Amino acid sequence: CICLSTAVLVLDVDGQTDPNVLTVLENFVCMYFLIEWSLTVVAFGSSFWLDYWNLFDTYVAWFPGVFQTWILDPVNPTGWDTVRKVIKCSKIFRILRLMGVVERFRDYSGFSDGWL
Image 1 (cartoon, rainbow, N blue to C red):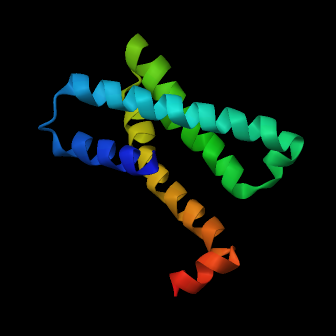
Image 2 (cartoon, rainbow, N blue to C red):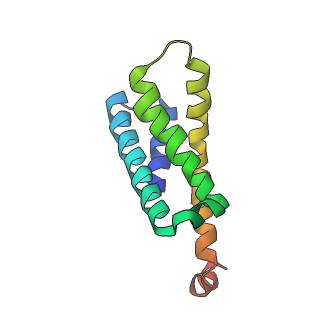
Image 3 (cartoon, rainbow, N blue to C red):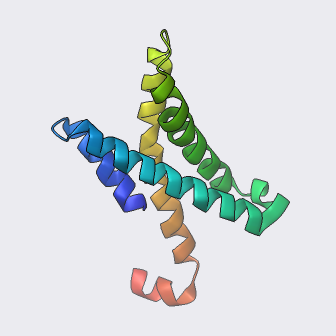
């Protein structure tokens, strides 16, 4: 889903993609990140909050995800244009999340042989 999220970001920057398609894709990505985040919180319990990548996932799932996609965009409050732009720019952090996944795979001995 991280790759789909990256594709959505590219399509959004492209400006030639139908906004309805982008909305559907963004909602799917947001839903996926939120479900994944929720399952991770349940699985790890209170130790979830001790890992920096989990805190990063929390930011990625809630601010550029839930807050903008499901709250800010539908309500469309006036005077929030700067906040909307900052949050939209922070969607790029989803790509950094991919680096965290790769880093976790590198810890496995079988994967590190093929990595090099």
